Amino acid sequence: MQKKHPQAIINEMFDHEAFQQTGYALIELLSKYFATNIEGNRQVILWKDPVDEDLNWQAPLPRSATLNAKNLLLKLGNEILPNTLAIHHPHNIGHQVATPLPIAALCDLVASLTNQAMTIYEAGPSATMLERQVIRWLCDLINPNNKKAGGILTSGGALANLTALLAARQVASVKFSKPWNAWKTGLNNNPLLCILASEHAHYSISRAAGIMGLGSDAVIKIKADSNGRMCIESLKQAHENCKEQNLTVIAVVANAGCTATGSIDPLEDVGEYCQSHDLWFHVDGAHGASALLSDQHAPKLAGIHLADSVIWDGHKLLYMPATMSAVLFKNAHHADAAFSQEASYLFQEEDSDDITLEIRPETFNISYRTLECTKRMMGLKLWTAFSLYGTDGLGTLVDEAFSKAQLLATKIKQFPNIELLMEPETNIVCFRYKSDELNTAEMNLKQTTIRKQLLKSGDFYLTQVELHGKVWLRTTLMNPFTTPEDLNALLIAITES
Ligand SMILES: Cc1ncc(COP(=O)(O)O)c(C=O)c1O
Image (cartoon, rainbow, N blue to C red; front, side):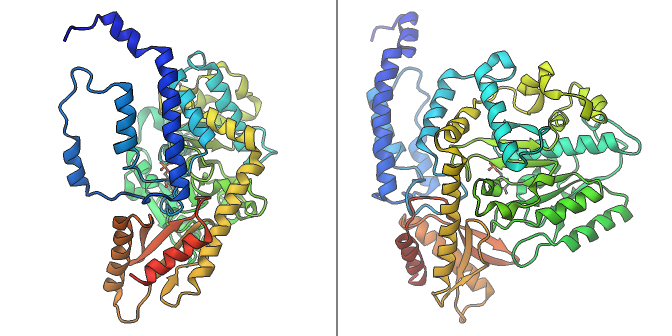
């Protein structure tokens, strides 16, 4: 075959008419996929053993084209899309992953094509402003009276937690009786630092401690009660122990919706304790901060305004496509502490009241505040959702999710051989098949077997969690297409397994 002229290859790659044509066809394909999933007209997952499946992806490196746009769409339609976990399928009730709003998915296309690097203001002027706008809105939801709040968007809650804890460490080092610059000189010859966190803290907290050089053991776990909520007395005791051992607490981490059960720690009590003991209060609201959108459920987060830092995932209960998370600081100034490369933070923290950070030119250069150098235009999708539906509209989704969890819990209680772990506080429900004839190990195996059966049959997608030696089936109810009949079908499938 005759070799194409390089310019012809380039022209073909960037042909805007072809973009439009393929784009229309792609949207048509995705719309059908979306409708099929919503209607539940396929298995929620087409289970294939990954070892076998991997054999289908051993094609040699394509030195030249192997597909044209038409074939690409066929490959997508026939092989790639059918092999996805159908996130909008009514029987997808597993992870805390949003059924993304279609308009937000379209915004991600805008983000991809415009490819705003956002490192500095000029590398993404509108992207920077959109981000600043949504950050203001999220801060407003936490505390409309705090005009000093600020933060950034990051790619995921794990990175958001790391960012907040880096800021907490920097603030602790600066405030220490013999101040040092932890960012610059690290931990050498400095006091032992630790983090107090709920025993149900997400693993990204201990990972952050590992990354920060504290060691994951530096996360001291605080006991939770039988409803998964941090015990304030255990927190106080742990803090006392730290003082005795000369350990400096850089942050207390509370959950606003813990991963395992969705339980919300007593934020007011923890926050007040932190305030009165000059401790950094971090709220991991990756999952549950969105309760702030709901008049009915926002009171569960009472005390969140006391937090020095809060993280909030867009791709969970804000119904955004992954990834989009926010790190929000009570004092915007602290957003500069996490990555104190310029060290400006060190000298300005103490008299921060006098500094209007919002007008410092570098504030508009987002890379000062995040690990990411280049990052996606993440603000557009949330700005769009807030603008099209309002917080009331998004709050409807939160209300719907929480009430469906309540409904599932009520239904479970009507099944004698299914045990409910606890009343759901948010939209995560844990339960297990129960039999007096099985011992603990056999019961645990039974839950795992049930889950695997449901997964392999493609009937339902749910997850499992181990708590204090017991395995529980775990569902996250955040799919607006799951009906009460679907929940009945799930419980019947479990009892009959
Ligand atoms: C409470 C909590 N924090 C943090 C994370 C990490 O968030 P991401 O998956 O967005 O990195 C999760 C993830 O599920 C979570 O449940």
